[in-house]
Each structure stands twice: as C-alpha cells, then as structure tokens.
Amino acid sequence: MALIEIRNLTKRYQTEAELISVLEDVDLDIEAGEYLSLMGPSGSGKSTLLNLLAGLDKPDAGTITIDGSEITSLKTNQLADWRASHVGFVFQFYNLLPVLTAYQNVELPLLLTNLSKGERRERVEVALNVVSLSDRMGHYPRQLSGGQEQRVGIARAIVSDPAMILADEPTGDLDAASAEEIMNLIERLNSEFKKTVLMVTHDRQAAERAHRMMYLEKGVLHQ
Amino acid sequence: MKHARLVWKNLTRNKRRTILTSLSVAVALFLFAALQSVLTALAASTEVGSESRLITRNATGITFPLPESYTQRLRGVEGVGSVSWANWFGATYIDSRNFFAQFAVDAESYFPMYPEIAIEPAQLEAFMADRSATIVGRGLMEKYGWSLGQTLVLQGTIFPGDWEFVIRGVYEPDNPSFGDETMYFHYDYLYENSGRRATPGWFILELSNPTAATEIAQRIDDDFENSTAPTQTETEKAFQAGFVTMWGNVAFLVRAVGTAVFFAILFVAANTMMMSSRERVGEVAVLKTLGYKDGLLGVLVASEALAISVTGGVIGLAAAAVLLRNNPAVSSILPGYAVLPSTIVQGIVIAIALGLISGFLPARQAARLSVVHALRKVA
Image (cartoon, rainbow over all chains, first blue to last red; front, side, top):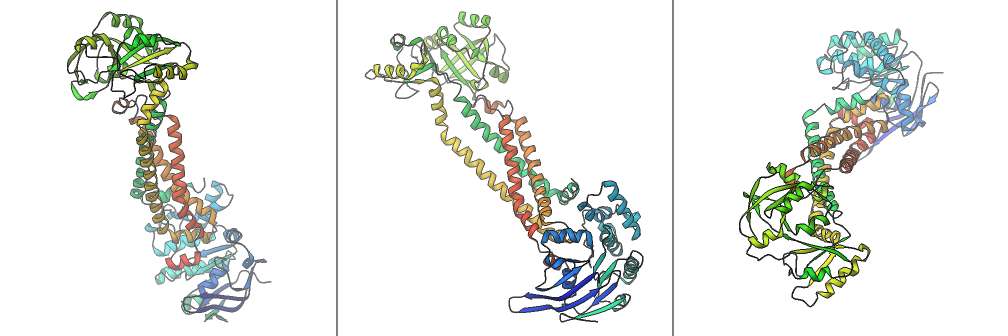
C-alpha cells in the first residue's frame, strides 16, 4: 500500500465570473521514501495539490489517504494535529517569523508537543545541525542570507520528524549556488533520513533530481 | 506558558505602538480611578451624618438664618435632648483661593453632640476659655503649616473685615469622610464682632429617642409653619444626603465621562490590535501550517491585547493610588476622597474586560484565517 493515495481528487474555485477547475479527477500513489517532483505552468494547480496534501485546503471531491488515514474526512482541529506530526512544509519564501531567532523558529512546531524544554533543545540542535546552521542559532532571519533562511525553514520542517516533506518551490527565491545547496539538502533528507518528499518546482534541472517527475497541466496530472 | 515568548516577541515587535496603546489605557484607568473615587467619596459622605441628630433650617433655604429665639422653643419639644446651632462663616485665608469650611458654633452645646470630632481635653478647655479661639482639623494644620497657638487672620466675605483667631485645638475625625479640613470657632465671637448681625444658620437637635425622629421633625415644622421663618427639619443623615443630591448631575457627568473614555480607549486599543493582527496574516498562516490550531492562535492574539490592557491598567491605577492619595486640592472639596482598594479591583476588572473585548475581533480574525488565501497573499 502506498504512503499517499490520491483518488479522484477535484478542486474548483468559484470566481465572480466563472467556475474554474484547478484539479480534475487526479489519481496518484506515492510510495513511502519516494522523492517526487511536480512541474507545471503557473496556475496549473501544483500548489493547490500541495495544500490539499497538507490538509490546508478541502477538495470538492475525491479522497486523500496518507499512511492509512483519510485526511479529507478530518475536521479542522484534527487536521492541525495530524499536520503537526506528519507534515513538514517548506515554503518558497521561507516564511520565518522575523521576531524569532533561527533556534526559536525551528522550535515552533515542538511547542505543540509535550516535550520538555531540554528535549526540545536537543531536537532543535539536531535539526539545525542537519542543515549545517548550528552556528547561526541565535541569528534573526534578517541576519541570514536567503539560502540560510531556507535551511532554517527546512530545519523547522524536519524538527518534529514527519514522514512527509512538502516543498513548494523551495529554490524559487534563491541564487544558483544557494539553490544547489538546498537541492542537495532535500536529496539528503530523502536518501539519508528516508523522508517522502513531494516538491513543486518550475526548475526542470531540480525536478529531474527526483525519483519520479510528474507534470500538471490544466488540472490534469501527467506522468 | 510555552507560548509566552511568542506573545512577548509580538508585543515588542513595534515597541512604540505597544507603549502608546498601553499608556492610553493607563490614562483611561487613571481617569476612571479619579472619577470613581469622587462617587465613592460622595456616597461615603451620606453615611457621615447621624440618625440621632436633627437639623432644623430655614424652609426658604440654607442661606437664610433662623431667629435665636427658636432655641428655647426647640428645647421644649418632646423627644429633643439638647439643642445647638452653627453658622457658615465663608472667609478666605490670605488669598481668595485658600478656601475651607469655617463654622461658628455654640461650643458648649456643639462639641458634646459630636463625638466624631476628637480633641484633647486640655485643648478643648483652652478653646473654651478664649473667645477668639479656634479648633481646626489636622489636615488644615498640615496644609497651611500652622501650629498650635498661632494667630490666623481671615478675610470675611459674608461678614466683611479681617478676623483674628488663635489656634487652641486640633481635631482628628474618627471617620475620614467627616473631613479634617474644617475650622470651628465661637458663635459669640461672630455675634459680637459682626455688630450683632449674626443669627443661627441652622439648629442641631440631639434626640433622646432617635426612633421618633420623623415624628419629631414633623412636629417641629408644624409648630413653626406660621412663624416669620418656617423651618425644615430632617435627620442629619438626610441633610447630608441632600448635599449629595445637589451633586447629582455631577455624579451623572462623572459616569458619562467615564463611559465615553472607556469606549474611546476601547476603539483605540481594538484598532491597534486589528492593525497589528493584519500585519501578521502571513505569520498566522505559517503557524497554522505548522499545526497551530485556530483556538490557540486566537488565544495568543487575545493574550497580546490582554497584556497591553492589563499593563496599562496597572500603571494607571498605581499612578492614581499614589498621586491622588492625600491630595489637598481634592480632599478640601470632598472630605475622605481616596482611591479605595475596591476601586482598584474594579479598575483591574475593567482593564481585563477592555483587553478581552479589544482582542476579540483580531483573535477571531486569526482563528478564522484561511491559510491558503493568506499564503497566496504573502507570496
């Protein structure tokens, strides 16, 4: 059984003028430990699919089953709990809280757990060590480069040890060198830490580094 | 408590805005404490008067005197134990702004009737022996730096001219609401020095049977109904309450101003919180993505409003408690004026309510935020 099973997933948006179909009858299986990239033009529904997989949005039809749980039937609060323990989300624009240090940003997901302060510290240090930013713990986002900010974002995504990493154009705001670093890091999360990764990207080179590449166009998924 | 740091960091994100909002709440709560203390002082003053003493005054008004000959007739009324009388003097000290209550009293009958006015026996004896003597409250002594034996010169207004008095005694009231900024002197001194124009302003009757106060008051007024100066008699407590009734509109005004200030500050605080919340829409969406529940985010946002409001409230109430304590400018008008602990408690409750109400809308906004829309907006 696949880790992620998507069946007949449909999502439409109602604008003032018309009903837009973003995803239409999408079926997809993603195995545990798989690294999958998703490409497609702007507005093709890539981010919508990612949001649905993260439980941030509700489909109009179809189901998403992740690790045996059908998340499309969960209520808002149940989804929040599920997300906290199962999903690590990496944003294009890092989305770190500017008033918190790197350490405090990474610690945020752990504040929702029953871990002690010491246990939290241990986990945050490990996560920052994985992204090679142990020496930047006390730095605020404004004191970090774009690449470093994204590495903190990745540390935040993995600190609660989720099975699945969802990355929405993680290199979209970075220069080539920083993008390469991030891609290496994501690859390492998959190969070394066995994380299932689904990455949305516009960058063909980045997409080709995945085990499998999918193409989404006008709401329809192509292998 | 794990999230206290996040609340604190958000509060200190825009320090100037947080401080100014907190100070606006502080000013509002200072004002509340000041105004509420006026109301409590007014209410307390109605409790000062005794139920066992009657006040008989001219039915036309308190400013119209009564004939001295009424003394004997009042003494003869059944149920009346003893009779005394007093006059409002209305002079100023050095400057017309230095105004305080002065009463010319029939000392022999007056002070035994008022155990509330505590004076050392030796001082009372010295006062009785000296016709130009005066007894003044401890508050007045401290306010003007007077000392026992000092001669005061007051400028008369109702009874013009310079009036000399020698301080022979200092009283301290047993109840702060009675006031310690009053001056008492001999009625005889007023009578003689005014060219015998003074007559009693009002009579004070001590009842041998206080339970019959209403009947006795009615009988007195009936007796004098057809005289040249009809009377109005009531218990001293009712007499005091009558003065407070004259403040009636002030009490209403005080409440109206207090309510207006509350809502003005509420809107200021709510607007500030809304602005602060709107600026962080993206961050709230990120926290939701990390697994923060709607309720928790609402509580975090409301906590910020509560912290701003309670901090401001504590500052304002503390300032009121310190600055309004023994404030001569107020206590000379309203004896017993003080910021009571009950006012402080009410103020804290108001500050909490202000925080909760002003935090409600932004908290609800944060809780209901659509992550997808918010993230799209940020991107």
